[in-house]
Length: 125
Image (cartoon, rainbow, N blue to C red; front, side, top):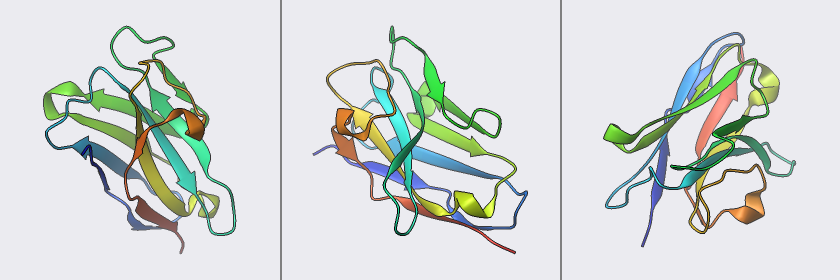
């Protein structure tokens, strides 16, 4: 069964940066849309960023485009979320997810078929 694995979370001070990674073993991600979502304690899951697969449009959506950047390295079968200028409000568990049916990305969690277990990010001094 398809398994996504997130990594790169941790504790960071306000203003700091982290790069999250999402990868899968025995499954090529490059044709599929990958989304990053987060869920803070007591809050609903929200879409952060997504990147479409080959021929998907738009190529990417980023709700925090002034601070977060999504990218993919197909050679490494990995999708990254670069997070800069982190704020305490960014504290959450971050999940990546894959959309199997279509290559076009979206920030609607219901559109995604498989999810990773998440990686926690804590922004605190």
